[in-house]
Image 1 (cartoon, rainbow, N blue to C red):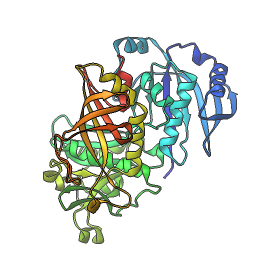
Image 2 (tube, rainbow, N blue to C red):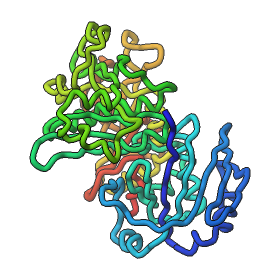
Image 3 (cartoon, helix red, strand yellow):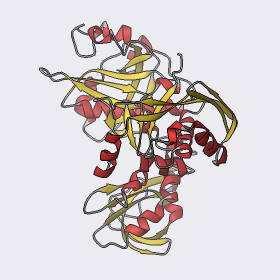
Image 4 (cartoon, rainbow, N blue to C red):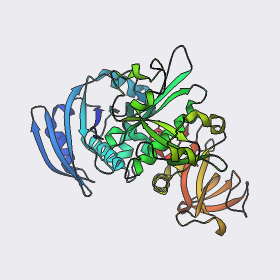
Length: 411
């Protein structure tokens, strides 16, 4: 498939900055983490070649007027003062680039470029994924050694009809990663959240895999119940819509102006025989099992990314412990019993309640029964260190904070 360019629009705190492209280029030249190989102005556009790691990527920057589309998702919380400032600004800085082999690496680089040019950006409109990002979050993400979560690369929208319960799930943003957009047709208001979980898990896995699954090939994704695997497959949208009423939401009538290229629909193979015969079925045949906490597989790569971010920002957790009104949870990776060890996985990741913090050590109580460690049980208490941490959560009287959204900590 043809990869599309990643399109973002940075909304500056100082509108005068974007009128001086030379200043923006100088800021890029002074930034760390990448190298500007060339910057060539042409009319109102600056063509930039950026080298980061082993990749050389082409970037275009130019000022443009903007209006925030109504259907774009606001990914982050914005203080009232930020919203007021955004509403007064008429121009932003467009930053376009084609992603390299590693889409998450490229996305992170695009945020770094924006932050280097406009360190006080109020917000970033990610046109490719149709979402709006907080400037505070962008600054934190750009300054981090750890890339954001894969879910930032795309948005999964749930569109419902006014008169019926039909829901059409579809993504925006995967095409810029060299992946097809994903859809679930004929979902329902009762079950679309479970279908969304399937779509999101598949999207994240596809972003990590070097090759996109071929249409019709089986792809193991989860266990929806004990011993019941969820095996999905992709079907090109043109073939998929032929199986439904053309007037249905997401049917052929909705494909005239969009969602008509490089997009595919998720179906399932309920058995090996159906996979061998190429007989796929709608995802809703698993609806009665989906609500029983299906086990979606998170890759070792994503687990490592989450852990790195949690450790990098653990100072926020320790600072939150100073306020007795906050409730803290930490996920720890503990070694499983010998009989459950696998070559690429020897840890069970389980949640503990933080009881006390002392320096970079903390005392915590287990909040659940482990599956693969027989000698500890719910209520077990011990001392731990940051080397055991894989994730954490802060519950303040106002909100819940994770390592991803600590930009809210001081708001």
